[in-house]
Structures are given as C-alpha cells and as structure tokens.
Length: 108
Length: 115
Image 1 (cartoon, helix red, strand yellow):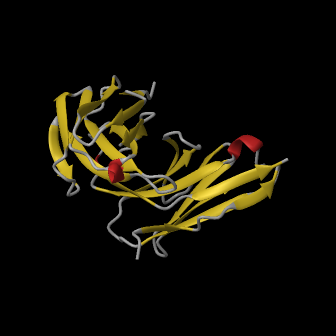
Image 2 (tube, one colour; image 1 turned 30 degrees about the horizontal axis):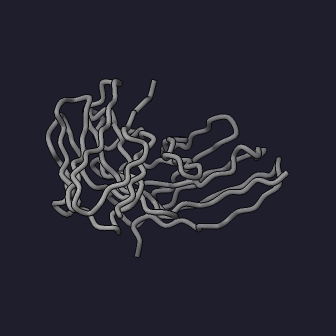
C-alpha cells in the first residue's frame, strides 16, 4: 500500500464548478501535510499547508482529518488556469512523501 | 521571495560522462533536498542536507553524489549514469528550523537525458 494515495482522475469540470480532491495517508506518525500544484513539465509549487483546524486561501480550502487519516482540497469557482496536477504530501521529520497526483482539467 | 534556482535547465550526457547539477537559494534556508521525478510520477526524495550535513540518503546508488559546499548551494555530481536515470531532478529548500512544519520550495529542475 502506498503511503499517500490519491485518485489520479482526470477530473474534467466546467468553469465555475466546485471540485474536491481527497487524499489518504497510511503513516499515523505523519506530522504535517501540504498540497502542491504542478503544471506540465514544471516544478511543484506549494499551494497550501494543511492544518487540523482547516485553512482557506481565497477559492481554496484544505482540511485534515487525523482520525480518518485523510486530507482534502476544495476548489470553488474553478478557473481555466486551475488546470494542473494537484499533489498531496505528508511529512515526517522532513521527508516529503507525495501522492500520485490528481489531474484537473477545467473546460470553458 | 521563495526562489530556488537550478542549472542547467537541460542536460544530455553519455553513460561515461561526469557532470554536475547545481542548486542555489538565497532565502536563508538551512535544509536542502534533491528529488527525482519520472514522467507521470510524483517526485521521489533522494537526499536531504540539514545545516550543510547529509541527514538522509534514500539508498541512492553511488553514481549520484551530493555535495553541500555552503548553506546556499547544493550540487549533485553524476557519474556513469544509466539511461533509466533520465528524469527531472528537482532541488528544494526549507527553513530547516521548524522540523516537520517546514514547507519546501522547489526549483525549476534540471531535465536530464542519459544516452
């Protein structure tokens, strides 16, 4: 079983839609969690850290459920520019472990 | 400013060549990382340097040799690579003093092709 698992998608949604990604992790010792966005042939860019209390940044909301060992990312009012691969990751003592990534395609 | 720079952007090398990848950050970060990413796969950790000392080696073959000359620079020396080593090599850095809370910032990567 992979340490971090995501549905690879693709998720094809119209502009303006709300889309949610979930990610599960198996290592209960994982201490911190992040969402990264990666465009084709580019580097991962940090989108959000994920805290137990949840956090929001504009159209993006991230949640952590430690009891069920999953994290989520909600994107509201999707834009064409949101099309990318979204990588969830967990960290334990500085080692970032990534999920396989979820591909989002936002269509006009 | 969360900029990590990497050179070269692209590198083609033969299996008998020796080359080096370079990474630099000027954010005062004390932890630096090398990752390898194959097409349609997530990045995989190779090495971690913390305060200029190698703290994690993820059982990487010895044909990859990391070096941290100072807190701003990270090199990856390559020798006798195999075609399957062709990948995007990503450098990242983090503050290094927040333990597991550290957020890592990635450079643009070096796209390596081994012929």
